[in-house]
Length: 615
Image (cartoon, rainbow, N blue to C red; front, side):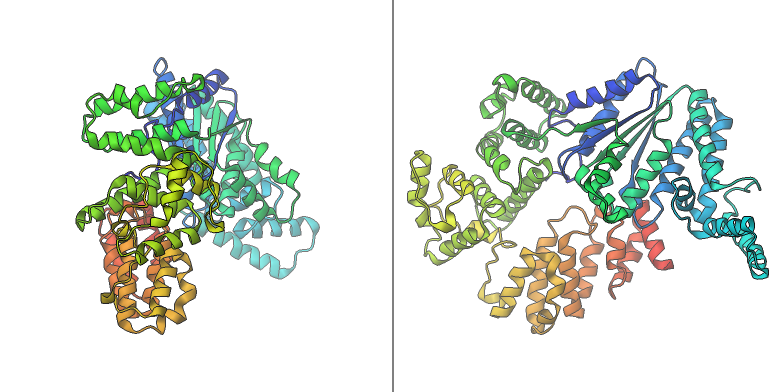
């Protein structure tokens, strides 16, 4: 199994691009720099951020104190803190700590932190202050204060306004208490200007460049995305700063449209483009890169020394750098750099050889590294199920079927599984002629349901399936092709609901009335199958299968304890903050939250639990 998050090792030959970004920052010599790393979900933006940090660290060796790094993930703060205020505080706190450690620029760094704290004191966030600076309507206590000031200047004050001002002052003092004793002459516009000056002076006195690495911005909801960009803009284009922002530019543009309403496309494009001086797109993966990536993933899980794994990785990346002149990374090449590879690994290299072209051409995967990894994880899980149940499925056969399941026409896949179930030997004999012609590169005449470029390529992949018993493959693939045994005692309605839930788990809530009408033994069987699929999840934020668990437990409340027990057993590292508000209103959730509080789940998760308990 491979973790679904980014790795710190370069399996994609991105180091050259990362080195270029690091060179740009270094050569800027203190001039402000903003770099946007764009790419679709799962394309490798987070890896690129990590590689940029590594590359800068290597350039930092001659002058190890020239950079200060701030890594900020706005997604972690979504729903629990103002992202703008959080980014300001992280930057100010980091500079303050570094100034104390270096014994340089201490006074300016402390002043910067105090000014940021004052701004946070305004409604415990900077929303109103930034709103004033950007010409937007202010909110909260600052908004009330500004409104009072405007009335005073215009001479429209009433006796009630004066009495209200005394209460406003008391509220403001209470809200800001413990953060900073604000001086009477402070105001948000002045403070924002002062923060920028103080920030720049702090960096100058310390003689450093601040490198802010922002990731996962495109995972955020539009308000969080925009508020983070507003905070970035506060520090952007100041001397001795470099911002590296990783985001899917399509998602950023969507957030701009959602936030500002019906604005024309030019304004949407300009909003993000004006923040970015140097746009860089994550290179798309071709067949060579996908093949190499799959092979390196197989090497990563092999039982060999880390030094050997690293030497193989370096050799593969060096070969990829020469792919433009026809050099290949394939099974034969891998056997030259891993001479003692066991037969099992060589077979997997062969699988990668055969599957890589379709991994690139199939629109459902399109060479996306995260989707490739998820495909291999699904394959690994099903092989584990096969071994656990002594089914004896061949991995190459399973891989070919899984690829069809993920990327082929769903109706054609249903027809294939129906043919397997209806054949006494479990063989899809109708494929024989097609597979033979495809292997011989002869012209194919396919039925309308099967006439698809993907299927034509898929038929040519070895092994040929027409003479293979595929019932074991379907058995270990039950979450997508459930085999309903007589022991399950499911009615046709129950079987239909189970199939629908497993195929589209996030739509399970819409099936509540039908689920609630089922006999209790049938909802128990459905919960069994849902939890089987849920065990394959490696990250518990808000996966789609969680919706299915909640929906079945709502239809049959007696099953809520099973969901609670299942979630309580998940490893602490898999639990993410997003799951807390998702389950907090469920009657079975209290025990789960209490258990998580007593385990080593992350601080953001515990903070989320505290928030829902207070609210």
